Image (cartoon, rainbow, N blue to C red; front, top):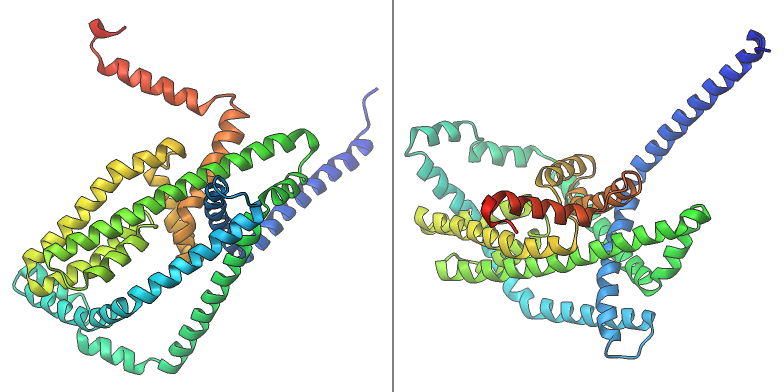
Length: 372
């Protein structure tokens, strides 16, 4: 006996109502996440620092019989002491160089403009840029007091966020299993083991990514400092420090760090500016061919296009914080795609696929008679 039209109408209306409710729920969740995403980024930054602290604490536990919490506290105290000592030793020199950098950059810009004015294409480029008088007039007409107030409020907010992030990272690094266990309880019992495996996979990926990034930052900072010193570029120490710190941001960091170095080298001569440009290009080539392949052996490979797109998207949405954290966030997304979709849904194993592809590439390169 077929159901009547009257009986099927309530069922259809119920389905429509359920679908509309689900859509509204998804939109509400997206709306809430958008406005609390700053908190999520802060928590993600704390997780990154916690993974770094936990990795150092595990190394210390090999030699000291301390609990997990005490080893994390010991590592945190040592890092703060080392950072304080570095600030004490380098702060006077770096502060003096920063003051000189502020004084020298306008001179270098003037030299660049004079050099460009000797060429037709340079004069055309300068015509599109505001003059010094126009820039000074804009500064004078702006509300300086409000800008100063905004600067101090943003600075205090940044210091507060950093302090809160460090505090959260110490708590997370001291008892990571407690938070992992609590998070897995949000899922059905049959999926908790898989969720735990994915969390540990994400943690291992981010841990090796941080180790590689730390080595890369130290490598780029030292090499840039030494190279600029021998080239004769002033303020080499500060420029090397800036290059090392900004190298945490792939793609855009090296460009941002190269601009002041090239401008300062231009004070001496255009040839020195070319030497500085060649130095930054050479450092990036060495780093990308030595350090980056070492990182990708232990972590997921991040496609350059996806990295740039994620950086641009998060920068537009959340500013500088989004740009800084875009790459590790993309690394987490890649792990989730590989584990939840490629492995669980498609049933493939990324490691086996990588080995098979490497073998196929090798077979294609080798002549037919040399294949074993």
